[in-house]
Image 1 (cartoon, rainbow, N blue to C red):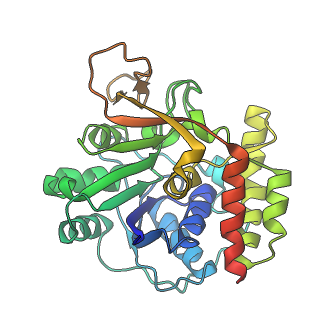
Image 2 (tube, helix red, strand yellow; image 1 turned 135 degrees about the horizontal axis):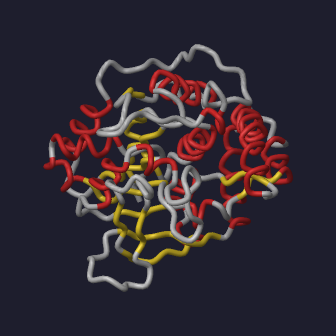
Length: 315
């Protein structure tokens, strides 16, 4: 079977970085058409640089990387340096990447790539605010018929929010973009906090990754060593949730996840609950299903997959 064509839209962030490594470790299953960066965890000038540095570390300096939107569609920008550090990828040495930044705007790349693809053929994998994806849809709605599926990280139901009591960061950072994506009419699979909080980067799991002793594993262990310090204190857990790699892990091994078809609606008006994802898990409304809401995962299988794939960079 031919590898699945994907575009990864991200805002690295340590967990985005690990997500990129997981995708780049799996060329037999995933054909990465391009990596698009968006402002989110840190400003755009840092997210695009961080994405390119991950390509360097993985030995993929040929990977096309594009910079996209520097601010949300409507609201003021917000970032998360208190979690990710001032660079976004604290825990490793940050250097000027060899992988070049392509001149085309990420939104234009998404539009051009989708229009050139067959109908329902490309999977979008957004792991940050949904600004680039929603802007592309809003600008050229014809791209929708070329999208196979959108597998995103964002939202929360039972877990509540991680930035406000109601909202997860990616959705809160651009709720108007999220509303466009969830309502776009194409299949959406959402990895919210309900599932990502079950894949914890414990010290034991990070030690197994570090023991692989290749450049990608060493970088991953370094970043996760920094990343876990905030969330372990916040949640009283043994490790930080490894949010973004859940998207690619789902593409590689969907059977370790459990999900349910639901309606997901995004709050775009309320000052109190802005960015809230209202997940109609028990079908108590007549709103149509628009999302495969992932709510459970086998965490040991997840880390077995991740560690096994990162080991490939030592070959």
